[in-house]
Image (cartoon, rainbow, N blue to C red; front, side, top):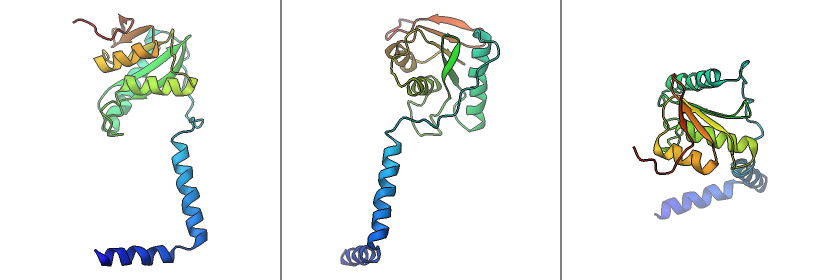
Length: 164
């Protein structure tokens, strides 16, 4: 134990004041990037013809992206006034996040882009029927309607406790 303490003390002596200052500011910068709004978010590619078909197609493109990255094969987009405001593929495996479902990640993306948690009047398009967690997230975000699958099934407004 005393050897480890001595090694730590020796290392601390080797770090000069300019190096310490750099490490402090670099660490603070890394911490701040997690709390500042992400202005560097890639622009969303809008479809030429905004309709149910093209929005579902985009969800399936994201599903294919998830699959190609080794994640669960799901994709989702959030649309408001005919424009995609949020999108994501499943990020469960990529981010080691059990809540990183495509729908949840797309809702998060939309909220960040709008700088608001209120997604009232938005529509959630997803490659498959949202699970109860994702439906609850859509409910709390104020999403008006959910559409899923190649058949573009209108699942209606999200609910917290839907009886099967």
